[in-house]
Image 1 (cartoon, rainbow, N blue to C red):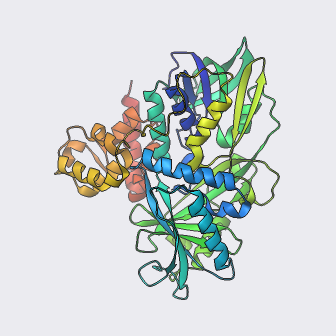
Image 2: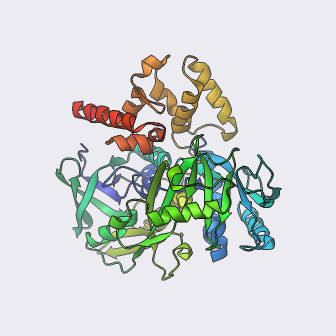
Length: 504
């Protein structure tokens, strides 16, 4: 149960996704007394349902989103440095189909992408031949040529947790499963009424500024906080499917679809491929919980136009859907709605609420700087912007030394399987020692739940990373649920419930 002991803060952030987490980290590090709440798990909604990419957004160039692409490309370089255990370079191959986009258009787009990117870590783009088991692996043989460029992959849910761990280290108070019931302006501050979602227990806090980073629930927070903001959000649902690995090699595919959107096929946890995403307008969150049959068919049809061995619905082993609250700019085509962020401030009697619409996973850190700059009339800072120079927890090593760091970990724990240690390092980075402690053998890690999850790490997730439900661990703190059988997942859920029941 989350208990609010201190009730007076400078900044109350509603929403524990990547944007709220990034803002909490930046604000706390500048000396702002910060509290962050989320009605569910941290990163439990949109921020763990992305395509798992840190990228500039190549297709946004077609919509003239040059500022967004430029900022995203520069942030891509920063995040590669800050969290090299969670973010890694990834080559993308785009097979060329003449009827969809001419080669000259793609070359110009990639030249712009390279030029705007300020690349220091990633190689540039190039034309490639699609042959056999190389860049054409898994594709139809008539696809002979294509283009290659680099972006990066990320563990999105763990990026949220890393930012929150840093925010906590800098003094932020973090409260998952805590819902904002109402907020009102009173005597120069906000008085916010909260409800613990697990116990129903009410509590109350005050804050000088209310930061609405609630994502798909941004409008709900506005409506419950005596705020007059005319801006509205378009709820755009994006769904993904996971299938057994469709091609060998470490490159991903970016495929042009007949509706001029693009679909990604991304290597995912060794044995699978991640395919996404859709873009579907939804009216309410109730309509957005799971992938629809139409979305599944859309993704399969899109990739089957390219794959030598077509996929069927029976190949799908996992699906997930997320909803982005994009700023309503009046465009009817979901793919054309801006992914850039929009900040709207409502200031009355010197008490401000800032509502955040849109935003990309890639730009979360820069967004946080922009938000704090916008809030400077109401908040006092003891420090200048700082988050581009301090690694996230576990990431304080040279990205070029990742393999050496994993090898060093294996040397330190010679009786543990290398694949297990590699997975643990990619989840925790240098902080993996806090998880393993003095456990020299598998027996010392406690119960083996399957899928590479052991009791010691599960207890770490509960004690140090705010895990309050079995799914928090199986699908967000880790993806070990993907490797488990249904029976193993059920057994883990029983153990988790028993473990939570024993806690004071």
